Length: 44
Image (tube, rainbow, N blue to C red):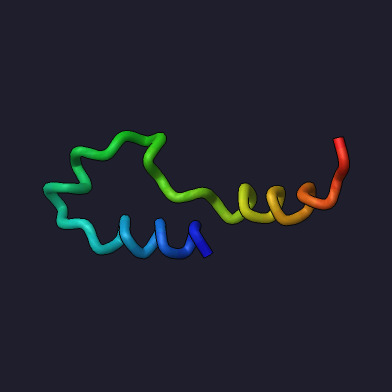
């Protein structure tokens, strides 16, 4: 849920606001979301 809301918030930024973001502010990739889902079941 959080990742979808974060992505929606990023998409609603103006172009000027978007220029102020850093690459670390980007929404997580589909592969990141898949890994989170897959590995959350592991007990480490």
